[in-house]
Length: 365
Image (cartoon, rainbow, N blue to C red; front, top):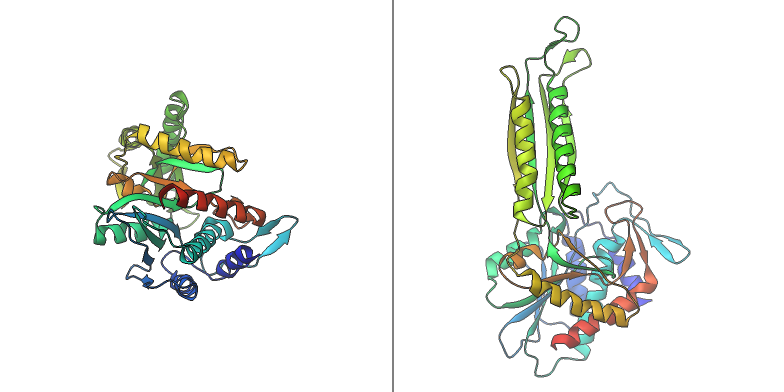
């Protein structure tokens, strides 16, 4: 009941990326009331608590993020239906943060003795827009004293042993434009951009299918262009997102985009391609190391009656993994439909998530 209430209370605090302070303040105050000393909200809006230093001088990060993908105009109303709770952001990542906070209180009440590694709690900001909080914290404070990193940010059956990165390509097409009747036949920027998108998408999807790959993806998230119905469009834009778990696979996707742009560039049509979000942090931890760690955590889930599913994702683990720090993203609750207004949580899974977290604590403390 306490886990459910804590989750619901935080869910109802709006926390769009970049505007998480109220939720961060709630989290920090809750920890202080639980007996935590030295809890701070840093300049990046991360809630940070260095607790229980270890003999080695190194720390294990236990993190979950405070922000959601939903803006202030999205209504936050918790609805209960059978054994489920519905509300935007209730699972990603509010429920995971709630379980982690209760786990921290358990450590306050049962402090580790003679522990090798210290506990570094971070409720990170702006995870949804490029892991900004985690990146800024580790960039400022360094990674030499970090032994391992956990990001609790998924449904409990999922174990992410690898990372996924992305680049957003802003593709802009310029064409002569003209009167829709009198200049008929003049290239339209919208039509030429559509050709680029269709060719790129077809080639990328064929590559992904032929190679039987699961994590590289292509998505056209936004399009704009033209002025009105009776003018041939002189300008059009598209934001094309290319994701991949390996840089060399991203290069293949990017090459298909480049070929399509070259194909449709003419004397009348100019096309530019600009990377507008470079938040990629490519993994340097050997796959076999992460496979072994993932399997060990999978055995814990099996002991709880849960069949693990292994994959890779775009999470707060990306930056520490790029610095050679083994990092794992796992869930502490059962949730569905993240990034959807129909997002739901199974509250009965919260105690199971807490038990899983305590098993993780036992691994190190």
